Amino acid sequence: MTENLTTTISSASQTVEISRDFPTVMIGERINPTGRKKVLAALQEGDFSIVKQDAILQVEAGAKILDVNAGVPGADEPELLKQVMQMVMDATDVPLCIDTADPEALRAALEIYEGKPLINSVNGEDKSINAILPLVKEFNAAVIGLCMDDTGIPSTPEDRLAVAEKIITHADKLGIPAEDVIIDPLALTMGSDHNAGRIALETIELVAEKFGVNITMGVSNISFGLPDREYINSTYLAMAIYAGLTCPITNPLVTEIQTAVQAADLSMGRDEYGSRWIKAYRERQKKESES
Amino acid sequence: MSETLSKLSTAVIEGDLEVMEDLTSQALDEGKEAQEVLNEGLMPGMDHVGVEFKAGNMFVPEVLRSARAMQASMSILRPLLTESGVELAGKVLLGTVKGDLHDIGKNLVAMMCEGAGFEVKDLGKDVEPDVFVEGVRDFGPDVLGMSALLTTTMRAMEHTIKSIEEAGLRDQVKILIGGAPVTQSFADQIGADGYASNAASAADLAKKLISA
Image (tube, rainbow over all chains, first blue to last red; front, side, top):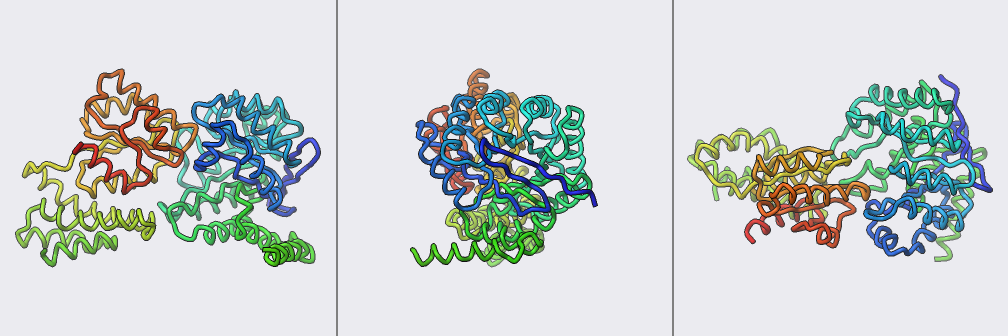
């Protein structure tokens, strides 16, 4: 077994360490207009109050890092991303995960960020590697590498591992250490392919075993098209944590997600005396009695 | 209605692939025309699936199973339909736009449109505007449906419509768009003819656009 690497991400005032030796780090997914028409409409109108609220609520619910996406069609993305990030940095102290497909917007965001951010994302396409990795190096950031390339998303765990290897190797050539590359195996929806969940789990195991790097994943997608999605997402999350997932991008406001992460950490021996589980229980009790 | 055709409808709804070929052959042996089998056997089944899916009572894997069952029957009926020169409801060309790899919604639309009696051609995902233009020119669809799931790729719909305009083909085809970030106002803004929020409404809207 390869040694578990530790990724360190920071804001101006907080440092977050990600590793299979530590509790799972939830990256809050909600500051993202994709598929959230209310957020999209608000951002289009220049109304950032919903962003502020999402930031605060997610941190209160246990998010240690916040993903920030400002992909609004027709908008000046570099400018908008900077504004949204500034709003989040003013509202909370947690480190950010800068989520953009546009290298120009990424540079603009990196220039105003204080600390060491996580960049979301690079993939195995040469174009992406050549545009994103130099920025990761220049700004001493960490980066999420998606297991897809010019041919799309490989259908086998072995082929996804090969894409992860390509990204880690290219990063290394630029002097970006492996611990600053976090791999996303890509969880596709089980609604259209019942093997999609298993393929991502096996990819996690292969990548963790071979490189010891941290693993992230957007968990909410796997249950698309199916009923009772919270049960699927939370169960899958716990299984993926056992496989080697360390920093899921997820919605921490969902109780089933919170409890799945906490119970998985306890089950993995990462919660001494069960103290975090018990503390979380008392907080839920308190909230129930207040409401 | 014949018992065999009603069994076919039920098999489509239940996605019972195994019985489809036998039931289809049986219906034809009983003297039913291919068109009758399609209109009174398969389509009522897919209609039901569409309604239940829209209402949230059926789910994506079930729709996929139903569509697969229908395909099994269609592979027997299609040559017969072509032979007898039967007019289908119309032609639909589909694709997920450039830069976008999401295709579940688009695939569901393809199935619903087939179920509604359209001839469907699917260009796949990550489709360049030029490929859409060629498709419109060569296939001659009544309706073009485009899908995008990302806020960053939905602009490609606008570019594609522009390319179709520049090629002088815009007045030959109705354009229908959909996908998670897409809205009616976006459709209006980029000059599409319609927006559908789910696969079943997409098929309904395609019918409406053609008859309009």
